Image (cartoon, rainbow over all chains, first blue to last red; front, side, top):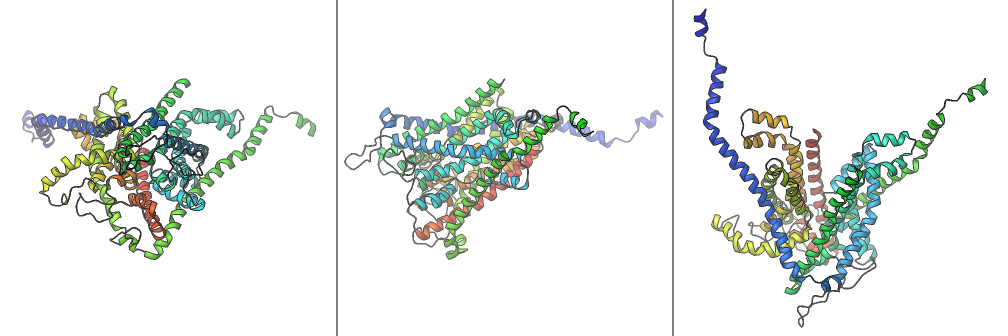
Length: 308
Length: 320
């Protein structure tokens, strides 16, 4: 009996296991080293990804800060000439144009987008699903296409470039972004809250006003502010439709000036003074955009805290 | 009998009645939502129509030659968009070659390697990259990267191949290479953010299973995490590609605005979007229509790429 036990044929599985263990033990040093090197490379790559950001901020501050002054921010631009090549003047009207265009575009887009977001969150018909897909695709379309759109319908009809065309282009750009963000935050509202409202006998419109919108507010506001920030920095659509203005323009029916467009125009200028000022314009624009996008984080965090 | 019946009304039925009434009388609300959806649907149709309608004369006159023609001369024609299509594709490919490895590495680092307390700040920094307007990237490329390319990168690359393809020809700074580099930085946040989201839904069991089998951390990342997130990662790459294909101003500022089929990466060029931006101002008649035809091509390409990207990322995140 014992004979047969000890003389059992070698188990192939055990043999293989021993082989694997031996191999693993032999290679563990090499494998950990390779692993550590690889993980190190990943972190290095991540740090590398931050280099452009650092360089960009450095360039903006180094080259932009020197051209920014109080007169630069609130006076009108002056055209450099051969006589006075350094006559830059200010960018007051471009700041004004940017604020007006962005604010009015937001004013047009926000109600449409929030209602659209409600529709997308509540409806589940085929048409609604199709519209949802189209709106998602629209968030990825190049903004210059909206410039072509606004040109065709506003500039051609009015026979002049105008701030209005820029407002329309940016509003259509913003609606899908805000609608998507609002839809997501409406969907995030617990169904029980909504049902409780309906069970109390409130109409859906009342439940929306009194329950869903307040509960979804932080997400909505974040979406709105981020979209406003994104639209504020858009150059391409404005380039096609708003024209240019060297004066304060309070009527959107006239040509207007805007910071992103001015940055673009100054960067290609023949005058070194204007090329240098492009950094000042860009810095102003970045600060305004950052106020909106950092503001969105702040407001959302604040609202969420109040809830608790 | 009848009078008794009416008197023994169930308590609360009035409430039920009110609920029924309110459900039906809430029509204005429903109509408002549906009306808004219809309105914006109409805006989208008008948008597509405006591009189609403006492009139509050029499409009718030049037909398919608009896509295959090798020369693009603004103002007079011929209007062959092949060089623009090639440059658009080339800059996007360069951008992806740089941004995909760096982006994936960053996503993995953000999820698994960066110390917990630095993670929020690191994510915020990457998002900051996304918030910078594209004209600022263009400005930075124009005044910061061009000198660097001229002095360092271009001679270095030319040195590698001995001045042969693909790093041949004059080194002006303005080039498809520079456009690709600027684009890579611009699409990086998209790739990092989306691939981080899809990688974060890889089941922990899989990762722990890999580790318990004795695999090292890098082996788990390469052989378990990345393959199981590949659908979503493809989606992230496609989203980045969509953004690169349609980026306008930054490219227009650094590519040199020269519609030609590139003979090397140092060649100047022009993409679909950058051509629309730089030539639209002076466009009259047939050029305007030809530019709208470019817009149409751009719309079709980016819509297709974005639709594919959404499908992929949605499928990846659905398993959550």
